[in-house]
Length: 128
Image 1 (cartoon, rainbow, N blue to C red):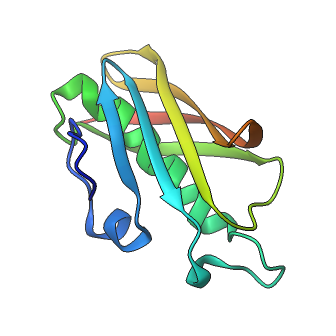
Image 2: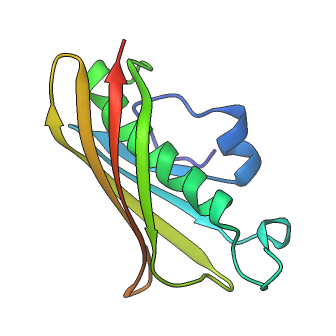
């Protein structure tokens, strides 16, 4: 993990992917991940599963920030629109809670590389 101060806890899986939590507070988060050779798909681009993992982690951090950083929710459903492939470099995911109900959070996320939009996501998290 980087020297940033995440509100929530990162997982062994996110550390395996090299996901860095830069910010997670007030229902919003910013995470980064560098392309690694083992993330390549057969087309030479970042595998959609790796990108989804970044998105899901960012959504979780945004939701968990409303529980004081504790894992107070989990993914119920998530829809991702993959817009363009990633061949190299770093991607940034911004996520935010759109509606924080007692039992359900509705969220959105955007993944960008520089000024290019890579993917968008909409999700629902169930609160424990």
